[in-house]
Image (spheres, rainbow, N blue to C red):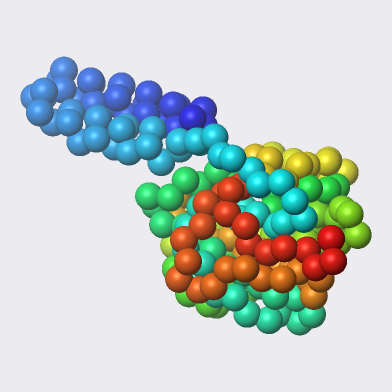
Length: 200
C-alpha cells in the first residue's frame, strides 16, 4: 500500500475522532468512510510481469484511444477513481528525459486531455527503441508524482510513480511495435501487454 494513503487515512480518522468527541459519535462516520476509501484508493497490489519483447500497460484503466500521432501510435488509458493509480514503466531501459508541463484539468477521458492537461512526459530508451509515456492529470487529479530521474535505469513493469485520483496515461510507440489492444479494453499496470516488438 502506498504510504500516502496511510497519511490521508490517519488524518481523516483523527478528524473523525475529534468530531465525535466534541459533538456526536455518528458525526465522525463520514471521516471514517473517507479514510477507508483512501486506503483502498492508494492500494498497490503485486503484479505478474510478462517476459518477452513487450510493452506493458503503465496503468490500470480502460483504453480510450489507439490513434496515430506523428510517426507513433498513441494508446490512451483512462483511470477512474476506483482504479489502482500506481504507475509502472511500460518498457525497460534508461530514462532519457522527464518533462513536466502545467496545463488544464479537463475530464481525463476526453481526447483533448492528451494535449491540454497538466502532464509529465517520460522518455525511456533501451534495446534499440524509444518509448514515451505521459502521466496526465484529470478533472479531480491535482498531483502527479514521478519517483525516477533522467539517467535512471528501470525494468519493465517497475513502479515509477502515481497520479492522485482520476487521471490518464498515454503511451506512444514507434512503428517497430505491433499494437495488441483496442479501445474499450480494460488493462492492468505491469501485467497487460499493450504491444509486441516486431522482429524481436
